[in-house]
Length: 516
Ligand code: XMP
Image (cartoon, rainbow, N blue to C red; front, side, top):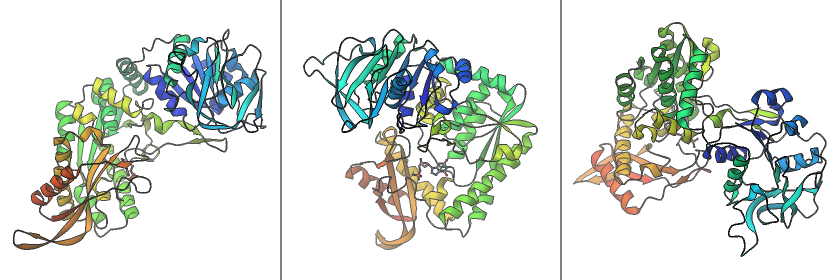
């Protein structure tokens, strides 16, 4: 395994992505966690020092322990990582006057370096390769043992290496898209470090099953199943490990899409034979939400009821000691904040945040080390149907946040039907997998229309479809006018209660994906 020491670069996660794509297992640690002891225990086969916003010449700027250079393993320093490495090994870094580089730059390689194998291909004509730079400081004097293997106008030491010790240092960011040959650099680095690239999902599955057995023993585990990919994959994996020691709780809050409750219950109870509590709490949730129109109030009511209901049903299991969650790696990475202190960002999942402490439960989080696409790959490995794995995300508060203003059963019924027609249209046109998320929002206005010879006075709805990588930013999906026209006609013809259809073309930011 490989250790990535994080000094707070915005793109540290991308390094992990590049390595996972090469089937190498790696972990990102904030620099504060790296101590001689933790290094010895983790025993990495190679180390990458990330970039970061600090300045090496400044007093108190972050450093890894000196022991990291005595492990006898290959080390790759990137940007700040390069500078910290040079400084600690006897070189010198200065705050460069006029040598700062931000954005596209060109590096000309010099001499032969195994890390750069393949980089030279095709460079004969131009003599230079595009890279992405983002630095104010630069290395002014090389540490003993190091040689220069590439230069750029602002970084005379753009690529340096101590080939005897397999220490490599680059001023640019090979992990970003704008360094087209960056992936090659990582490929060469892991080859030099002796990785076989044999970290596979089949291997992960076996390892995870064993780890769950070791952690849980013969205790009981409960799992909040939302029907989303993460909790579903977690449940199937845990069930494979401990069988009926696992009980899933599926809460139907009356805010699910058409057919959703049946689909989830049938799959887990009948297909996977899992003990499953189907908590039909529709009356409770819809009752409490009656008359509420403020988005935050609605969310808070749902969040609180969810915890109450989950707790009540989890109590029925009796003696459960663990709570399973589908937490993913991006949610647990301890990121290094710009003030230099560690800041831990952990999202509360599946609306049961705070429950473990309250119920005295320990957590089982078998997906903690995986990225979203890896969870999907694990789901496929576990035999979950492809249609289930590729499902669009669905928010915990469900249709409540797609029904701006007051929620009524009538509006929810109309919304469910319109949504089903819309998704059917998207599937029929083969667009489902290109879209991150698509749904209908029912608007709290009625408008006048004419159908046949009669006047109508019905609800308007908005269609939403976005592309996104992680839900943090998003753009609206560019449907054709034909598609939009056909869909509007179908919705108005097939869904009583709607007589007007609009398409939401707001990106995020400034909009959000959901309407509330
Ligand atoms: P927004 O609307 O904030 O949504 O742009 C970003 C992504 O998060 C989902 N979302 C939620 N998921 N509980 C969830 O589990 C929530 O309360 C929640 N709110 C928004 C949303 O569907 C989108 O994928």
